[in-house]
Image (cartoon, rainbow, N blue to C red; front, side, top):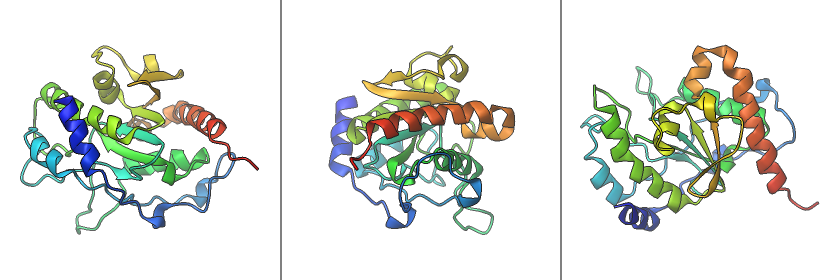
Length: 228
């Protein structure tokens, strides 16, 4: 099943990244919050094969909008969240939800560029009704791992307990116990931190959250320095 998904994704991978979200260039140091404006990252096209198979997941309904990923599909850094959030307001207009605002804000503050990121989700649809969480997560896991294999990022960022418990296969683990040091997922360096929604609900975690993003920025920039 895993190899089938990998082949399916490899064939279907396309780059829909728009120039509008690429910054003027990466800058050293912490960026000013006043310079930050959240943007809607372009959604990646859902592979036709994945669309057919993933629709069998119980979180998918007739009203569901499947979000395969967003940002730059060729980016060196892959971020994983538990599931997509709201996409449109009451008037039907696209907007950036609080989770993605906090996420993009952290990227901006440590001086990284949106072009270097691709955001995906464990569950590809936003749950609209009650569902068997354990079953849905296990169903979705091979699709996520197939995505990682296809995208082949240099770094992975896992955010929130749901993601790390599924990715690391340990229902008892937590962000608190895994953050602060580099981990490995599918032989790739992985950083663990809190879910952006947790930061919004508990602002006291912001300092820790930014420490984790600082770890990522330090390593990524040091390993990707361009010759002068």
